Length: 241
Image: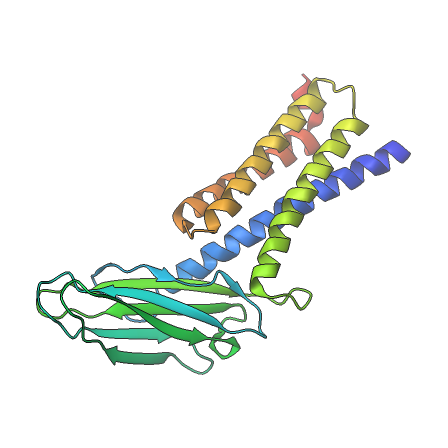
């Protein structure tokens, strides 16, 4: 009975770690997908934004964009920021005067008043076309999370540490409870190890906002999870045979 409880506890720990990583990475994908279709849609080159990944309701953050004049003459490009706002979109426009080959950093402040859908801050920045200076567009989605009165960065660290810790402790405890491992237990451990690797990689790719790759890994992890549940939990005897 004690070993069965320990095995169940190990499974719960491991599952909690996997779900923590999946919820985080899928949250980033959701934020980026919403941001990609938010605001004005224009055919333009990519504009890199520097945005916080996560903020709490009690803190403010800063979004920055580097606007570059690649021409050999001065230009006054218009930069438009469309930021989500409770009750409607907030549009901020400014005209820059850039010397030849000059790069200027433009900043916008965001806070809890910019949260929509209960959890997201969406930002869309457009550098409009001016003469031979091509237009550029960048976007980002920021998660709003209140976790034990922590800041966004502190919550992010806690999510990463707890997810990996739960997976490692749960996996080691389960392996020790079932030692020596028979064929079924060995296959189960390898499958769960592969699942943990995929969810951890998904969480890591979410940090630089590689949301296309993160989405693929999340879907793959869900498929693996369903296969593991079916093959090793629902019908374990079929695996033995």
